[in-house]
Length: 112
Image 1: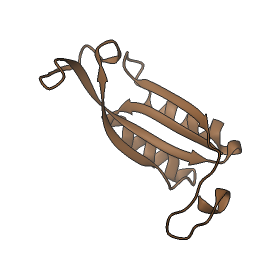
Image 2: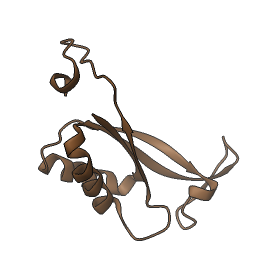
Image 3: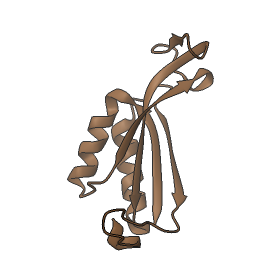
Image 4: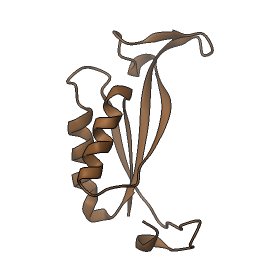
């Protein structure tokens, strides 16, 4: 299994979620994050008093999927998140050794 993390613009998150849902992927999580300095889009960056630097508000989307689905999911997210502007984000892919569903104790594929 794979874990896909995509750091994308907030305004593109719904479009990416819709594309994943249309492709049959219904399990994703979203977290608000701040891109700092070099990763910040100059046009949309704002000064953050708490951290004392320029930041962009972004979304971290996380998806756990089967190995065979990883290329399709990465491409769906990439296409829907792309604005062709600096600061569109990045996507990372990691191996997942084990998944356990909290409610049912289902393991691996059954947990998805």
